[in-house]
Image (cartoon, rainbow, N blue to C red; front, side, top):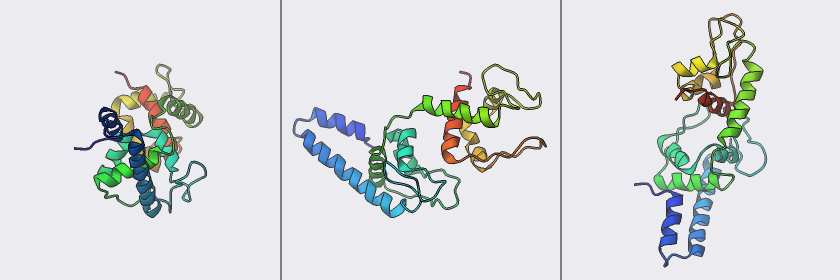
Length: 201
């Protein structure tokens, strides 16, 4: 059974024998181990600092990952294998302890709670710039081009998460006027966050 970092903190508060300095020291060790693993396995492509860009343009800085995921999602992602579309990204096989250490390090670089409203707003801006000439991108307007489906109809047929690969690799259709778009990973995250807002309950 996985014990998440927040749960460890609650247990520490419930046990007088475990002091807060001891908990802080344990957390610091976990973060340091996560950084060590990241420097060995990730630094060739990803920026591991609180500022600066990644050596590989398509690889998001780890501080951006911290903004888009919560700790449990990251631990699960490391354990299950990170689903990415870049050919240079190796398949990951990590232990539970390594996944928790990497997660502790990533989350130390930025806020752990996903900023969904900001992401969705940026996704709307991207779609407005690239897609709204033909497609309706809101909840009720008709598409300017009658042959272009409103995006609310698209998400009614396909879960937005299922569109991740198409958005990253390029959406190709049989329509002559439809340009091929391929979005970088951060833009894909933002677009999916906005498309999620169009789903009907």
